[in-house]
Length: 367
Image (cartoon, rainbow, N blue to C red; front, side, top):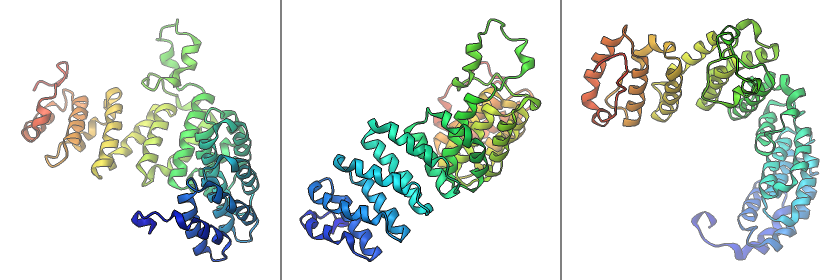
């Protein structure tokens, strides 16, 4: 009935009595009903809290995980202290299922009462000791949501996080990659080429160099192979295997990591891995082409040998055709100008909306 949009709140007193039922299947249905109407019937919902507390000690880990998950989902400020006590208990549970639910519950509590941040950080500090790849992704996700600025907590766990990367699920990998990218920017030497440093303005302050990573638009510095820190090398090496991930968000994050942290020669090979996505779905193509366009604005030589990969298909949506056209313009030089001219001569009649776009006058090819 609820799925059909009918109001079943009148049944709340009768349904809430079944929270202690032994059947796990029925228990899930009762909990779903309880969460649906808890805000509307807060006083009656409080009757189930004692049952939840008892189930945190149940022998079945599924019951314990379900109990802490539902407790933290009931948005009633009066039970927040009880919920936090439950999280403190379950975050050290022997079951990975329960620990995972406890960590996810921290985010819900933070969204309800952010003023208790100190308590949440203490719990995250405990959770960061997690060794299971099934849980660590959730822990880092909670860290990124609650206290992303506390990178000092990551020092002792950095190497373990790198080692666990390959075994974590794709969304957990994304959370860890995001964290380690921020950590590496703050903790490791700025990736600038020492040879180029001599030709730069000597008046550049040390503060500007130390804040290099704060400027996402700059790519004037690259690390020489021989000066890559061992810990940074560990991170880069463990990123390579997951470059084969099916999750495009993970792949794009690794490209970003190599853009900011890796030697130029290594970044080139990573950037070329994006070419395998230019024939995927239009949604994925759009994300990948935007990234390639940004790279080609600064380093067109990477993709010049593969310019044919960006030739325009008349059946593609206009936003894909426009991105490809911009990339081709970036990659055009005296060596491939005839090839590009012939391509535009064929493709432009099918792209009336692109014709209206202004082609830079200072481009190397005359249309």
